[in-house]
Length: 234
Length: 293
Image 1 (cartoon, each protein chain N blue to C red):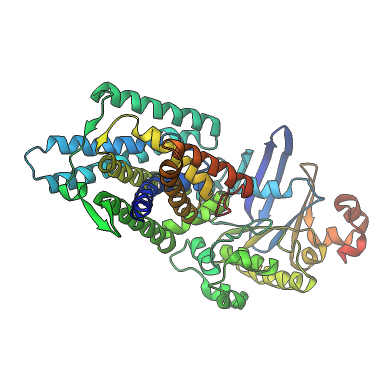
Image 2 (tube, one colour):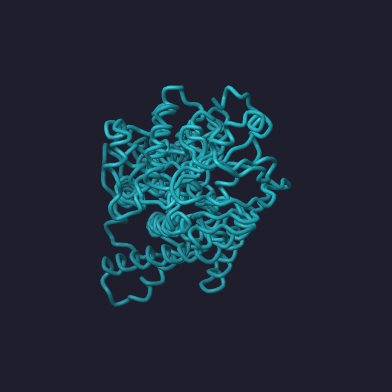
């Protein structure tokens, strides 16, 4: 059953026609991976879903139209966002970053500290002084504090050491048991571990929709669509 | 020695007024990216509201009349600023050129309107007698209103700091100064914070207007415009968006202006402030606090 439905979505940024009428569905529960080479519009897709860039087309969350709504209202309908490059508030402490994200009457601090015990110890530390991996924990934790219907997660392993990539993958697996995730990810090892479905973009268009495992098992297709060697998908 | 003390306290008093105007200007730019050329109008409107209220309370003793006038000035300044944000700035969100044109237009229109109603001549503002007397410190006879200006600015600085550090709206504003889009992506309607910052900035500017009535003893339609120029310099030197940088910069600008006027030549104070701005921008393009710019 489809939870998030995107129909004929177009986005122009300046003179560039970034998204050229993409359509896809995200099924309820589990992880759907949004894949593609660099610059094909993956991040723009998430930003358009969040209302952070203007788009034309339809975006529905469980039958409720999101397109045209301001970002804060989209979020209040149950859409959580973990942006590329984390975007933690560097001058605020870890505690303040989390407090700012509180939306529900009972924010899920137990879950957050179960997944990221380090954040409890570093509560008084300025987020700008954290390592990249710790900042990623803050970014994911902010989205997990509230009971979202769907989480949009943009390249959570970008720039992280291999050990931390494994840790993020473990967290994504746990998160996918709680909510639906639309994941933009370049690391196909992580995709293979966590994703059930895959949507592939190329130059602003959807070129493939199907089970993630089938896609990743088809090495010539992976090479053709994602431009990576078969070893990456292993 | 007494001259130096007098100049220093007077410079701090002037710096206090600059801080009161510049604090709102700095927060508005930091959060919203709006260069608010109408900020001086908030001061003018607040100052005239104070004078007007006072003039209508003829039978009331001077101290309560002065305090009621000051409260009216602050209320009118805050409401006026909030209305400006709601009806003029909000429709032009992210259209920076149009925002500049509108705020410049509003500044000019406010001066024209005030002049049309009350004339271009300076009006005398009544203040309690104590404010007009002096207190002797290290041989220097310091006008008492300077103390009130300094203490008021300190109270406003502490209050704003407490608001920014200890309240949820303060948290939203601090985060919004860093990354406004991400604040909205956490489900927060940042526009409410915009209105609040404008209202707070308007109240602080109106306080400066009330204090300038006491400092100068009169009120005239150009008051906001003339003080706004120095407030902009203070904000740029301090670092756009930084309250502490603005406070430090206001003190430096007020003191430099006073010292230059006395020790160099009368009238060189303004020039020295502009020179200071140039030096700071060359040495630290992002201002003393290193924020924005």
